Amino acid sequence: MSAPSCAMLLEQYLAFRDGLLSHGAGLVEKLTFANVGNRDVYNITVPFMDEGTLILAGRVEERESEFSEVRFFANEAGSWKPANGYPSFALQDPFITFIHGELIFGGVRVVTDDAAPSRIISWVTEFYRGPSVRRLRHFFTGPNRMKDIRLVQLRDKRIGVLTRPQGEVGGRGQIGFTMMDRLEELSSVRLVDAPIFTNQFLSTEWGGSNEARLLSNGWIGVLGHIASFGTMGDKNYYPITFAVNPLTRESTPPKIVATRADFLPGPAKNPTLGNVVFAGGLVRRDDGLADLYAGTSDVEAQRLTITDPFVEYENLPDIMKH
Image (cartoon, rainbow, N blue to C red; front, side, top):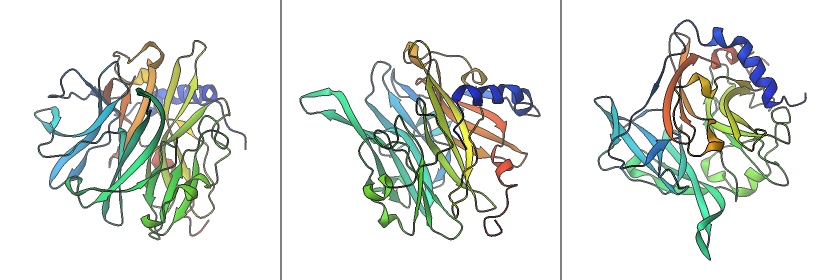
């Protein structure tokens, strides 16, 4: 199956948009952050419980800079404030999951030119593990220039790993998949060699995974993004979902689940980023809806209620009966 274009997926989404954002969906709000000075907070994780406190992680950054830190926030009276006693990390674009009972936290660390420290020349994904945020320890650094590495615990306790190579193998950015038994098996070689899905992105476009969830039928539900350049060099980023059968490694075609226009209007970090939505995660609800947490235009964090896109994938045949 050939990969669809970003424009094709957008056309499909817009044709069904009213239905996807009806019946209680479509509610949207900006998250407000306090005690961060004049810095922006965006590209957030979903809220999660840590030592009895509901917190989330967010990318904190000055408007004119790409050098950021990840901080953890707790909600107080409707505003998210830095959680007392929590560490910060010199990372971008945080993510969290739980593997074998441990919290897994990570983000992207930029690599700078030794001769010009303000110049970013590469990046790597850093991984930490522990029973809670305040007891995290570093355990793995991903391959050079690979963002959007995501982990998910499978039904048989193995670990599914979604990769995002760029360059000679992945072009502008493709998604690969591999499995392993233990976190200790993570290695740059294993990630670089992971087979790539061929039905997702054109060579002129790119995408990546933002969150992976084990579904009731054993499939992996993936929340990610597809991106393309506009005619004036501007960037278009759209949240997508697809499902992966970890046993056969087949994947369903990606689907756009929201656009920047579905969120509240606001400023952009620069004129090329006005149409950017970077998904952070989904909170699935019992009413067939899901709350999508995302960064918008590399400046703000918002929450949009959508029809739960993973329900469709849970109607696929159970992987043990496939």
